[in-house]
Image (cartoon, rainbow, N blue to C red):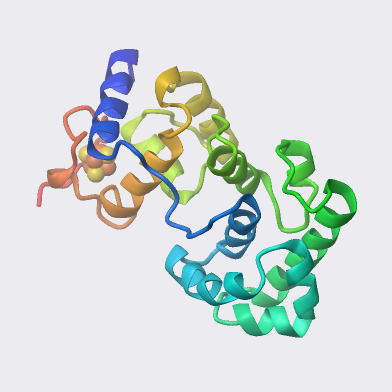
Length: 211
Ligand code: SF4
Protein backbone atom coordinates (compact mmCIF):
# COMPACT_ATOMS: atom_id res chain seq x y z
CA UNK A 1 0.00 0.00 0.00
CA UNK A 2 1.33 3.43 -0.82
CA UNK A 3 1.69 6.45 1.42
CA UNK A 4 -1.16 8.41 -0.14
CA UNK A 5 -3.66 5.62 0.46
CA UNK A 6 -2.64 5.27 4.09
CA UNK A 7 -3.02 8.99 4.56
CA UNK A 8 -6.52 8.90 3.05
CA UNK A 9 -7.57 5.88 5.10
CA UNK A 10 -6.64 7.53 8.38
CA UNK A 11 -8.20 10.83 7.30
CA UNK A 12 -11.49 9.06 6.69
CA UNK A 13 -11.34 7.13 9.95
CA UNK A 14 -10.56 10.35 11.79
CA UNK A 15 -13.33 12.31 10.09
CA UNK A 16 -15.83 9.62 11.04
CA UNK A 17 -14.65 9.55 14.67
CA UNK A 18 -12.45 12.52 15.62
CA UNK A 19 -11.91 11.53 19.27
CA UNK A 20 -11.65 7.76 19.47
CA UNK A 21 -10.93 6.01 22.72
CA UNK A 22 -11.17 2.63 24.37
CA UNK A 23 -14.57 1.11 25.06
CA UNK A 24 -13.37 0.09 28.50
CA UNK A 25 -14.70 2.38 31.22
CA UNK A 26 -12.05 3.95 33.45
CA UNK A 27 -11.30 7.20 35.21
CA UNK A 28 -7.61 6.86 36.11
CA UNK A 29 -4.48 5.14 34.84
CA UNK A 30 -4.87 2.56 37.59
CA UNK A 31 -8.47 1.77 36.66
CA UNK A 32 -7.43 1.45 33.02
CA UNK A 33 -4.60 -0.92 33.93
CA UNK A 34 -6.94 -3.16 35.94
CA UNK A 35 -9.61 -3.09 33.21
CA UNK A 36 -7.07 -4.05 30.54
CA UNK A 37 -5.71 -6.92 32.65
CA UNK A 38 -9.29 -8.15 33.08
CA UNK A 39 -10.06 -7.79 29.37
CA UNK A 40 -7.73 -10.54 28.11
CA UNK A 41 -9.95 -13.01 26.25
CA UNK A 42 -13.05 -11.23 27.57
CA UNK A 43 -15.38 -8.62 26.10
CA UNK A 44 -15.13 -4.94 27.05
CA UNK A 45 -18.82 -5.09 27.90
CA UNK A 46 -18.29 -7.91 30.37
CA UNK A 47 -15.34 -6.11 31.96
CA UNK A 48 -17.31 -2.84 32.23
CA UNK A 49 -20.12 -4.65 34.00
CA UNK A 50 -17.74 -6.01 36.64
CA UNK A 51 -15.70 -2.83 37.07
CA UNK A 52 -18.88 -0.75 37.47
CA UNK A 53 -19.27 -2.54 40.80
CA UNK A 54 -15.59 -3.01 41.64
CA UNK A 55 -14.21 0.51 41.10
CA UNK A 56 -16.64 2.41 43.34
CA UNK A 57 -15.49 0.08 46.15
CA UNK A 58 -11.82 -0.22 45.26
CA UNK A 59 -9.92 1.78 42.65
CA UNK A 60 -6.46 2.08 44.20
CA UNK A 61 -3.80 -0.57 44.85
CA UNK A 62 -4.38 -0.24 48.61
CA UNK A 63 -8.11 -0.66 48.33
CA UNK A 64 -7.85 -3.67 46.03
CA UNK A 65 -5.36 -5.36 48.36
CA UNK A 66 -7.75 -4.65 51.25
CA UNK A 67 -10.44 -6.65 49.42
CA UNK A 68 -8.22 -9.71 49.68
CA UNK A 69 -8.16 -12.61 47.26
CA UNK A 70 -11.70 -13.85 47.98
CA UNK A 71 -13.17 -10.36 48.00
CA UNK A 72 -11.60 -9.44 44.65
CA UNK A 73 -12.53 -12.73 42.99
CA UNK A 74 -16.12 -12.31 44.13
CA UNK A 75 -16.21 -9.01 42.19
CA UNK A 76 -14.70 -10.36 38.98
CA UNK A 77 -16.04 -13.91 38.89
CA UNK A 78 -18.22 -13.18 35.83
CA UNK A 79 -15.05 -12.64 33.76
CA UNK A 80 -13.19 -15.53 32.14
CA UNK A 81 -9.94 -16.63 33.79
CA UNK A 82 -10.88 -14.63 36.87
CA UNK A 83 -8.79 -16.81 39.18
CA UNK A 84 -5.49 -16.09 37.49
CA UNK A 85 -6.45 -12.50 36.68
CA UNK A 86 -7.36 -11.90 40.32
CA UNK A 87 -4.04 -13.32 41.51
CA UNK A 88 -2.13 -11.18 38.98
CA UNK A 89 -4.01 -8.03 39.97
CA UNK A 90 -3.17 -8.53 43.65
CA UNK A 91 0.52 -9.08 42.86
CA UNK A 92 0.50 -6.05 40.56
CA UNK A 93 -1.03 -3.88 43.29
CA UNK A 94 1.68 -4.99 45.70
CA UNK A 95 4.43 -4.06 43.23
CA UNK A 96 2.81 -0.71 42.44
CA UNK A 97 2.86 0.13 46.15
CA UNK A 98 6.34 -1.24 46.87
CA UNK A 99 8.13 0.04 43.79
CA UNK A 100 6.13 2.88 42.25
CA UNK A 101 4.61 4.78 45.15
CA UNK A 102 1.18 3.39 44.34
CA UNK A 103 1.24 4.90 40.84
CA UNK A 104 1.08 3.28 37.41
CA UNK A 105 4.55 3.70 35.86
CA UNK A 106 4.75 5.58 32.56
CA UNK A 107 7.41 3.21 31.32
CA UNK A 108 7.21 0.13 29.12
CA UNK A 109 9.77 -1.96 30.98
CA UNK A 110 8.21 -1.27 34.37
CA UNK A 111 4.73 -1.99 33.03
CA UNK A 112 5.76 -5.26 31.41
CA UNK A 113 7.33 -6.35 34.71
CA UNK A 114 3.87 -6.34 36.33
CA UNK A 115 2.10 -9.72 36.59
CA UNK A 116 -0.64 -10.02 33.98
CA UNK A 117 0.81 -7.21 31.87
CA UNK A 118 2.28 -8.11 28.49
CA UNK A 119 3.36 -5.96 25.58
CA UNK A 120 -0.20 -5.32 24.40
CA UNK A 121 -1.47 -4.22 27.80
CA UNK A 122 1.58 -1.98 28.25
CA UNK A 123 0.88 -0.44 24.85
CA UNK A 124 -2.76 0.25 25.74
CA UNK A 125 -1.82 1.91 29.04
CA UNK A 126 1.02 3.95 27.52
CA UNK A 127 -1.24 5.10 24.70
CA UNK A 128 -4.56 5.64 26.39
CA UNK A 129 -3.52 6.78 29.87
CA UNK A 130 -0.35 8.65 28.91
CA UNK A 131 -0.78 9.62 25.25
CA UNK A 132 2.24 7.75 23.89
CA UNK A 133 2.14 6.87 20.18
CA UNK A 134 2.04 3.09 20.69
CA UNK A 135 0.13 0.41 18.78
CA UNK A 136 -1.58 -2.21 20.92
CA UNK A 137 -2.06 -4.82 18.23
CA UNK A 138 -4.95 -7.12 19.12
CA UNK A 139 -6.81 -9.59 16.94
CA UNK A 140 -8.85 -6.77 15.31
CA UNK A 141 -5.87 -4.60 14.42
CA UNK A 142 -3.96 -7.62 13.18
CA UNK A 143 -6.81 -8.58 10.85
CA UNK A 144 -7.53 -5.06 9.56
CA UNK A 145 -3.84 -4.30 8.99
CA UNK A 146 -3.44 -7.48 6.95
CA UNK A 147 -6.66 -7.32 4.98
CA UNK A 148 -6.31 -3.68 3.99
CA UNK A 149 -2.51 -4.05 3.58
CA UNK A 150 -1.97 -0.94 5.72
CA UNK A 151 0.66 -2.92 7.64
CA UNK A 152 0.74 -6.58 6.63
CA UNK A 153 2.66 -8.98 8.83
CA UNK A 154 2.78 -12.59 9.95
CA UNK A 155 3.12 -11.79 13.63
CA UNK A 156 1.61 -9.25 15.98
CA UNK A 157 5.02 -7.69 16.55
CA UNK A 158 5.66 -7.35 12.81
CA UNK A 159 2.32 -5.58 12.36
CA UNK A 160 3.03 -3.34 15.36
CA UNK A 161 6.42 -2.31 13.98
CA UNK A 162 5.03 -1.64 10.52
CA UNK A 163 2.15 0.41 11.88
CA UNK A 164 4.60 2.51 13.86
CA UNK A 165 6.73 2.99 10.77
CA UNK A 166 4.01 3.60 8.18
CA UNK A 167 1.27 5.47 10.04
CA UNK A 168 1.48 9.18 9.26
CA UNK A 169 2.66 11.04 12.36
CA UNK A 170 -0.52 13.04 12.88
CA UNK A 171 -2.52 9.80 13.34
CA UNK A 172 -0.07 7.83 15.49
CA UNK A 173 -1.70 8.36 18.87
CA UNK A 174 -5.25 7.53 17.79
CA UNK A 175 -4.55 4.97 15.04
CA UNK A 176 -4.90 1.89 17.20
CA UNK A 177 -8.37 2.92 18.42
CA UNK A 178 -9.59 3.55 14.89
CA UNK A 179 -8.30 0.20 13.70
CA UNK A 180 -9.77 -1.71 16.66
CA UNK A 181 -13.18 -0.10 16.20
CA UNK A 182 -13.05 -0.66 12.45
CA UNK A 183 -12.27 -4.34 13.03
CA UNK A 184 -14.89 -4.71 15.72
CA UNK A 185 -17.80 -3.17 13.84
CA UNK A 186 -17.04 -3.16 10.11
CA UNK A 187 -14.11 -5.33 9.11
CA UNK A 188 -15.39 -8.15 11.28
CA UNK A 189 -13.65 -11.51 11.38
CA UNK A 190 -16.29 -13.80 9.94
CA UNK A 191 -17.57 -11.63 7.12
CA UNK A 192 -16.32 -8.08 6.59
CA UNK A 193 -19.00 -5.49 5.85
CA UNK A 194 -17.24 -4.15 2.78
CA UNK A 195 -20.33 -2.63 1.16
CA UNK A 196 -20.78 -0.25 4.09
CA UNK A 197 -17.06 0.31 4.73
CA UNK A 198 -15.86 3.92 4.46
CA UNK A 199 -12.43 2.86 3.19
CA UNK A 200 -13.63 0.23 0.73
CA UNK A 201 -12.15 1.98 -2.33
CA UNK A 202 -8.75 2.26 -0.61
CA UNK A 203 -8.58 -1.18 0.97
CA UNK A 204 -6.52 -3.80 -0.89
CA UNK A 205 -8.30 -6.91 0.43
CA UNK A 206 -8.84 -9.36 -2.41
CA UNK A 207 -12.00 -11.07 -1.13
CA UNK A 208 -14.27 -8.12 -0.43
CA UNK A 209 -17.93 -8.92 0.22
CA UNK A 210 -20.67 -7.26 -1.78
CA UNK A 211 -23.79 -7.53 0.43
S1 SF4 B 1 -13.32 -3.06 2.46
FE1 SF4 B 1 -13.87 -4.90 3.57
S2 SF4 B 1 -11.93 -5.93 3.98
FE2 SF4 B 1 -11.48 -3.82 3.46
S3 SF4 B 1 -11.40 -2.73 5.41
FE3 SF4 B 1 -13.45 -2.51 4.62
S4 SF4 B 1 -14.59 -4.17 5.56
FE4 SF4 B 1 -12.41 -4.68 5.76
